[in-house]
Amino acid sequence: MIDDLTKTNMKFLLFYLCLLVSFFANSQVDTIYNVNGVEKIPYYEQLYRFRVWRDINLKEKQNAALVPEEKKKGLLSFLLRTLKSDSLKAYDPADLDFTNPVPAADVLGKQGIQGVANFDSRGTYTAGMQFVFKGRVYDVSQDVSGKHKPGEDPLWRWDSRVKKIPATVSPFDEKKNYDKNSVVSFEGRQYTALQDLKELETPFKGSSFYNQGDEAKPFYTTDDITSIQLIEDVIFDKRRSKLVYDIVGFVLYDNEFPKALVNFKEFAGLVDRLYHERKMKTRQEVTFVNRYNPSIKLSFVDAFKLRLFHGIISKVENPDDLTISRIYENNNRSYGESVFARWEEEMKMMEKEHNLWEY
Image (cartoon, rainbow, N blue to C red; front, side, top):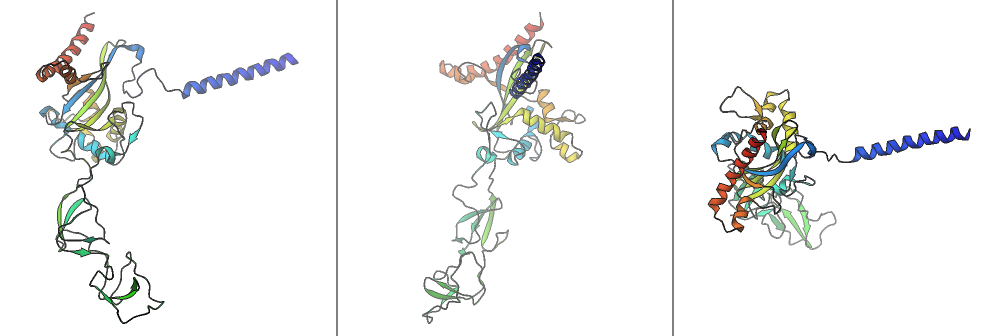
């Protein structure tokens, strides 16, 4: 009887051990392949791999499909729109592990015009001042005030004959609108409104108090982003005998300054979902403009996988984490030599792939 109980307990113990092992195994992050990549090629199937940074100049004719003349279409417009609406996460350009998303306003936001505040209906504005209202900048053409503070505004009359203010008279409240003949107390005195005192007139085009100006542009637009830096892992898959470009992400650049990093895996998931929506308008938002054959409809993800863009290598993974230009600069070599070196890296990649296929 005791032996039977012991055997039963051992079975239960082994069962619980198996459950624990299974739980911890499933809770571990899969490290067989790059979890931020799209291709999911196991490390043991990679004959060689190196990370490459490519600069995609959006002003080049070959990349014109990414930023068509109609600003509301194209890849760049889609990226800015989805980042602004938080449909797509933004990351700091240095966060290549994609661990901490940051608000789009922090990496792509503008402060409108420096020193110009938003419109305040209870504020006081003098001629020549500016404010922002509904994304536009307005100039104040004449002095206006929405506070109508007793003692400072001629629209209030001081009742000098009243020495003792009645208990029924309420103190002045800046947040309240007053009708004509309203009576208030302020700093020990009684005042009467000479006319209706309401908030400032809401700014509109053609207003007699405000002149409408340009847009404040609180977010970066397609005109502000000049280039995209593509970050990818170039992998030779020895099982398929194929060179694979596993895109990790891309960085939006304002001239020479990186602004926001986008995870390509998250981007591809969003594009694929929208590309298979029922509404034609939604599908067109993520459709690549094929100027050479409009009958073939591709998504943005397909366009990147088919390499329908032109990008020049700016950096290849190295121990010092230096760009090609910086390496040549540190060795007192000319900028022209570094330009040729960037093209040479492209040729070396093609030659390495060609030599492997010769075996």
